Image (tube, rainbow over all chains, first blue to last red; front, side, top):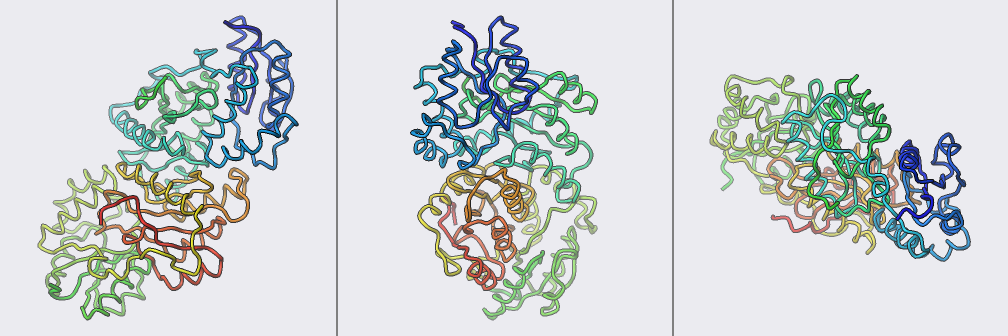
Length: 284
Length: 284
């Protein structure tokens, strides 16, 4: 089943290193394709790799096959690039009209089109957690603290709202406080949404006393997890602390934590809970 | 039917003046209850009035009845105050536990509780547009420009998304560009959401070329229009210009425009459309 090394297209953050390490710990080799401008060079040096640019699909596919890889995983964050910033190789140019059409339809359709192209080239595109399921958040607390029943009621309400947003390919995260959704994430990303909540509390727009509110992060119902697992990391905890939240809830079984040890320590130090919770009935 | 003067509780902005003027133009007297810290003192001097504070429900009800009013309208914006900032008169104090419970449940439930209390006091609470329907935006362009078919497809998608959010009492507005919802309004308000879109375009988080995107504002499906009509005004146009949007769409028949003449002129000067559009099947 595990035929040859795992090809790993690496975006930003520490998750690519976690997936590479976990894969190697399972006795399987990896070959990295770090994306220039996104991936962390310090990670790359520890593994065989070839730097690449967003848009060089054909080159990556050819090199992965030359390295004996049959399976490929994409991991790490990628702020959606501007078409004119991409570098398209000859083989990718023929995909351009298809990708531009998909682009206009939102992330999901773009990525689905990309996934079909990868598979058409003969490689099997896997979700990171299919290869190394140990990276997924399980149910229950990540640090020492647990959400209270009131927190759980808030979390359930925010998760239901995010599920209702799913068909519109908007976002995966929200902040809810005392039953009221106070922020919904769209293109700005989770860190910017948390900063907004901190701002609204500071400027009096949002009147909450003391620790209040939960960051809730859930996979979109139709989300293709081969591209985009909901993720939190130490920066999410920092943002939640600045927004004076009570904690962070991520969907168990379909979310990942970048640097879970650091997340647990930072959450415990700040008195926040970080917990895996059941999602609103998403398929596995 | 129009028994006595109309009592008007006035929040911020120019809408209270529009409603007072339109009511007087219909030959009906008004008596204003401008809210201290919110209402514009310049407006107040033109009409019989009594300054009041948020929380002084009983006093307002008694005074309105003393002035011969049978109907009351609340109009203008009110950033949700902190409970401890309110001044409760003796008659309102007994409502406090009820209001605090409603408060925790979000705007809609708070306002419904307030509406029930007003009606229990013997006054009839009306939506502004029941008294002066001419303040509502009609279908079609407000200025000189019209949305294109692509704009209309974007507007329909955002309106459907906002309708899906309705049960969660989150927001009434979103920004959509080329089929993708890039911002959803929650507690931050429309102006802050537009500023965020401008920031995302400036810092490269959002890659859009030239004029792109539409601000879409729709009544929440269960919204009680006696309290909260979706509203835009000159500041919305300024925000849309800074975010380099193509235009603004508001729900025809259930939205109001503060200072429509200024909105039309500013939109025309900037080359933006402002249009009333059909909502996602909301009840009248």
